[in-house]
Image 1 (cartoon, one colour):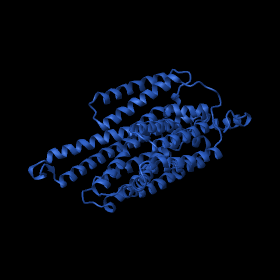
Image 2 (cartoon, rainbow, N blue to C red):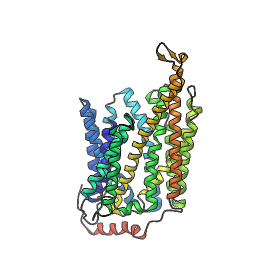
Image 3 (tube, helix red, strand yellow):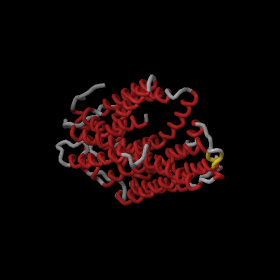
Image 4 (cartoon, rainbow, N blue to C red):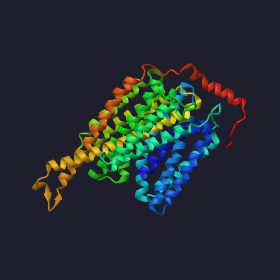
Length: 456
């Protein structure tokens, strides 16, 4: 069920972003919202596993229209630096806190209603989003009609499919199976062919000018690295709270609420007050170092630890780090992009998050399983096996060893990210190229003199 969504979403993101640029972002957003709602309803009413998987895949496909359209509308609507900072501060807070809020809401719905309501609840959110889009959004589309890069779309979709499937397969099987390294190898090869084609295509799906800028390139790498490392918090800490501390799903979700509060604070602080003054380099670097520090702190958990002394502090530091990393990266990744490229720039950010999440899930799950197995084999003895079963203390300690090993690796991911992003980002505040800065005004003049191409 997870893989079906990830495959469709990751494979179609760049295509969905470019369709928003060409067809119109309001139309694309509404189609994505309505399609996502219909797929959620079908999944909630599923009468078989196959129907549920198909609904999840449809959710991913419509999500690939919805996500980049939302971010590109935000990017092209707010041009004033202060307004843009506030808008991206709110957006970054929602992105950073959404996963934790989902843990709380998902736990409540599953425990007190049914797993089906984890899908049905999307109808409420879709209704609110669709109503707001109809009433508030204006139609945005490219000023000049360009052709869709079909070969590029096919190449990148196939590449993302292979990469997401390969990493997902590694998480559930291992890295040595042909279905893992074969798909990963093909995905990398197709991605290389896609990059070569984009430098030669007349109307490239992802114009090289979008990713060639050092700040934007750094932002795309930052969200990929953060997407991989964040699973060290969400994945293993959820396991620890439920399997070791025996929290219910609802309580486990509520345990992440302090982190949400810190994400909201740091996302707004970084985007509204700090990014216009210092630029993304110190913010993203500091955010990744904070996240790495929180994960190192979490390696001190034990079988008999409690939430307040062992978990609360690291969670709050992690929230600060995520807010300083994600929100400025989202703003920077779409800053200075010409309006006709806003959709595909937004989709590149979403793709980085998706691929990062796939890498993080597969890599950290594999390391966790290996660490647990190694701990068990090195501590097996007649005293630790009772009537053919592992002693509870050994089983609990092996899990703790697995969690802390995963935390160390995730901390290393964030540490490497701090070095990479600190090197790649330019020093100083963001400054858009003159042509890119003038483009929104030119687009507004053009739109004011032309009848809208599409009406909602």
